[in-house]
Length: 342
View 1 (spheres, rainbow, N blue to C red):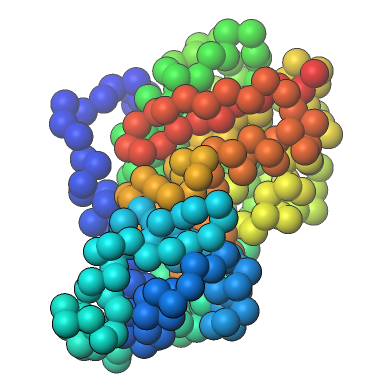
View 2: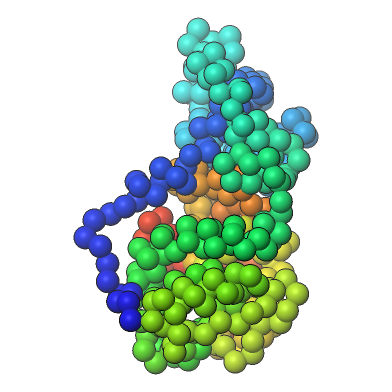
């Protein structure tokens, strides 16, 4: 059995950021060189709805874009309206003697650059690495090869994050955790390793569930961690679990879907049951942190979602009926928001 409580001696945060932040420069270049966005914003502060109307943007990708620009320090948020910072006014506005727009025109032929513009206007994700195949996220995961590759991608991160998540969660009063859309099962296995009294199950749709079973068996955790095959959009969650873990799952979906999924958790959890949202969370003002804002652009481009702020997740949990929401930092820019069913 793998020792899933072990931790490395060094910090790989910047290694992960090499991948997670890779699309942010493309989005910035498209806004600067193609749209001349900063010159437009310099004329008058504008809220998100006004920006979307002026440029024909969809709200979700525009929200991710403005969060990035705030985190970069190019835009400031004042009472719901966005305005340029002094740096942006000097370097990002056409007509300024220090305008750097021409420095970014060489991005224009790049597929990801063009994909960013299309996603801003259509709200459709462009797939990974600017792929021309624009499949919805749920449909892409029905492909066995893609499901296995993507599960492996997330597993490599989970080996670092999982043990810290497991030690952060207080599960002494609980007996059965359901890891919804748990991929390889790495988080469920790490939690089982840290909490010997606890049973864990991973809820995954076919064909991912087959990959999940293989990964759990390879680690030697098949007796501690089970797999329940099901579609989280259509099937009811098992009723014998008193903890629901949403780890790196809600960020793949838009706001109505997130609300619906949390309501499903509330419906089947027993009184006193706990929900735990483990993810990267933007600050309450949605102005950063920068690494999370940059990673959110990656999600905006490849999924139907983005990263949500602490305040947004708390609001969604409250609307579903949960109480006592609590926020705690984990590791690698991850945090967890827990709440309970009264």
